Length: 552
Image (cartoon, rainbow, N blue to C red; front, side, top):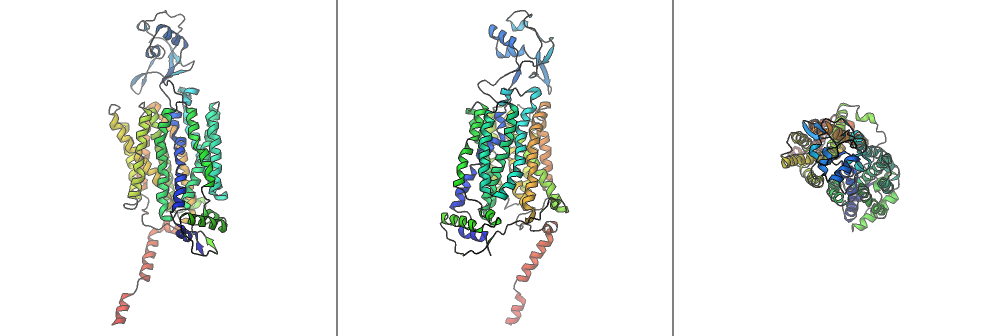
C-alpha cells in the first residue's frame, strides 16, 4: 500500500508548489497581528479629565491655557504616593456665583467640595479618536475596554473548537474560505457599529472567524510539506505575525480614527478570498475521507509544478498519520506522566497568552511615545524564531523552553522596580522579557505535539491550547485593573507566573532525537522503548564472532 508520504517524496517535499502556498498563507499572519493587539491603538486611553462647560467658557473668554483650565476643574489625588490631577473627579463649583475674574492665581478651589465627573471628559488626544474617547470608556466604565480584548479571546476559544471540527469534517480549504467571508463581514460591520454593545458582539464574531481561518491554514501548510520541513515552516509562519506587529504602529500613526484602522485591518481578507483558486485542498484530509482519487490529482499537480514525475502506479493510497477515533479526554489525565504533561502544558499555554498579551498591551499605558515604543518592542520578536531554530536541534527543547520562560519572568520582575528616570535601561530589560515570552509562545506549540502519543496528539494539542484563549480573556483585566492600583503591579504577576512556568518545564522530558510516541506506554515507560530499540539494534547487528570462527 502506497502512503501519502511516499508520494510526497516523489512529488517534492518542499518544492515550488509548497513554497508558493507557504508565501501566500504567511500573508494571513499580517492582519491577524492587527486583530490580536490592535486594542493598543484602537482602545488607547489618553490623558483625560472632567469636562465642565462653565470652565471651558471661562477659559476661552480669559485666554487661559489648557493646564490652567484643568487645574481649576479637577483636584489633586494621591496615586501610588504621587500627587496627580484626578481623571475621575471634579470640583463642585457654581461658576455663575463665583467672582468673575480672569486671574487664575486668585481662584483657590482647594477647599471646594469634590464630585465625580457629571458631563463627560476632555481628552488630550487632539486630532485622533479611539473607541475609548468616542464612548467615554474611562473611570467607572474603564472595565469595558478590557471586555473588547476579552471578547476577542472568547471568539478565539469558540472558533478553535468550531473550526477544528469543521475543518476535519468539510476540509481545510472550505473552512479557510468561510473564515475569510466571516472576517470580511464582521470586520466591516465592527467598523461601523453604532454602539459599544454591538461592537463587542461583532468583535467576538471577528475573533471566532479569524482564529479558525488562521488555524486551518496552519494545518493545511504543515500537511502538504515533508516531515523534515514542518517545524521550520510552522516557526516562520508564526514569525510573519511579528512582521504584522511592526506594520501596525505605522498604520496607526497615519490613520487617526480607530474605525478606519479597523477597515484597513479587515481589507486584506477580501484578497484572501481569491486564495480559493490558488491553494489546494489537503491531500492528507482527502485520503482520510476516502477520496484518494482527488488526493492523487492534487499530488500530481504538485509534482508537475515542482517539475517532478510520479513513478509509482498507485492502486491504494493511505495516510500513515491517521489518528484513531478512540481517543478521549480521560486519556490525557488517566496515567501519571500523561497527567503531568497535560497540566504543565496547559499552564504554559495560559502563561504564554497572559504574559505575551499583557506585555504588548502595557505599551499603551506607560505614557511614552506609543508608536515608537510599540515598534521597538516588536523588533525584539524577530530573534525569537532564529534562536529557536538554532537551539532546538543543538541543545534540545526543554532547556531553551524553560530558559525562555525564566528570562521573561525575571525581566518582568526587574522592570517593575527600575525607576522611570532610567527609561532606556527599563525599555531594554522589558524588551528582553518580550523576547523570552515570544520564544516560549512559539515553542509550546511543537513541544506539545511531541509529548503525546499519535492517537491522542490532536486532542491533546486542542485541549491544552484552549488555556491560551482563557489566558487571553484574563490578561486585559489583570493588566488594566491592577495597573489602577500600581502601574507596575501587573509586571509582578506576569513575572511570578512566567517563573513558575519555566520551573515546571524542567519537569518535562527532553524530546530531542526521540521518536514521536505512538502509545501511552511510550509516555509512561520511555526507558522501556529505548531498551527495546537497543535490543533490536543488537539483534540486527551481524555476529562478528561467528564469522571470525567460520573463517578460521
